[in-house]
Image 1: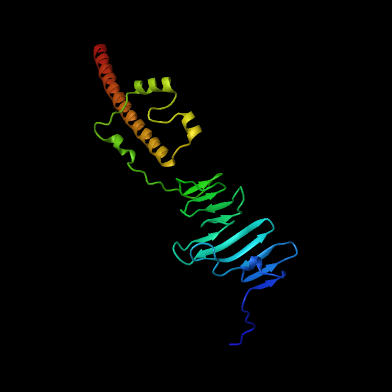
Image 2: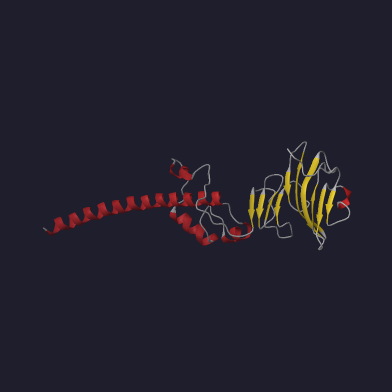
Length: 218
């Protein structure tokens, strides 16, 4: 196979010297922007910087991997083993070494995804354990309606539910809140069943009383 050119040593285009003497390939324009390709980049254990685009004042984007150990792929401003889009004070997207991602926000130390804005999706699945069917189990401490009324008058929200102030200040877990809502729906179903049974008893009593009245009229 014919070979166009073989050059031993660094190559510089638009500059009279390779970048800091360590780039194997260095291209620089009149504005000071440059593109470098490194091999055996001498920082860290086996780290190799594959390519870099930078403007005057600092690195713009870096792609690198480590040839030994953690085998990191890093894209971003001078990064530390993550993936960064628009590596500035307001990153568009960041994925850190732990796999935690941030979109419009810094990655969280606790959660896998942090989003600084609204989210829309076609479906969200939450695996909730335990699911609130325990409400229907025998011995569940269902409050009386009068107790619920008293709690609302005193606290301004349903028993077992967070207050508006708590949610507005600290937020809420979608899974936890879904469980609480289902719990209240199932409790309300029990109240409806209770009221239905009481209504049926009243209906039976009224029918018996009406029958007695009709018999007295005869």
